[in-house]
Image (tube, rainbow, N blue to C red; front, top):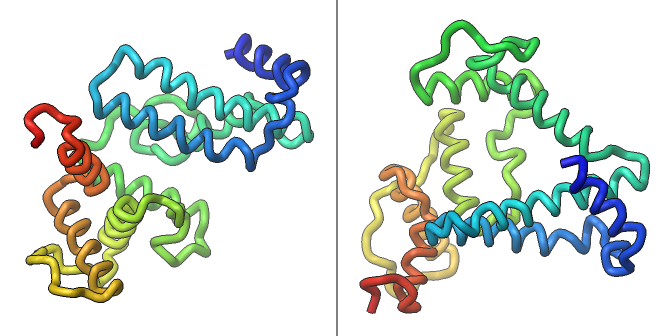
Length: 212
């Protein structure tokens, strides 16, 4: 990691293209590299995964370097902050000093309850269960993430997961309600709606074995 940080610092200083990068101009690359990791995982190309993860790491190091140049934070700050956050938000595994607990919870539900309790303690003024969900997530991912948050918050008014035929000549709002119900049905079955749609598109394009 130290060598990577050194290389990026040198490129920022001596490469005009790298030197012109900003947080804003890097956004498209961060999104693109993240999706390439997804593609590698779903294609089962493990040989490529390390390289794709390296490309994502490059984005993190670049953003940290940009911030360091303006005296805000550096890569060590980023690494220490996420380490402290993982310890703080996982009291079922770690004591406050970072050492391991003597025993660990047996269920995912217990883990989620502890995680949510820590998050509430960190931001006691937050009452909206949807706060913090990135609004620019792909729509199906946004829907499923919102449904998960609503379920964990015990929020009423969840969409009916029973999905029937597509409405005839629907309005845009009706189509949106239908797609939300599809996402709810996916969640009820333990599926990832976004991944399911990507698979269907690949089959439609004839890019998967057995597709027509």
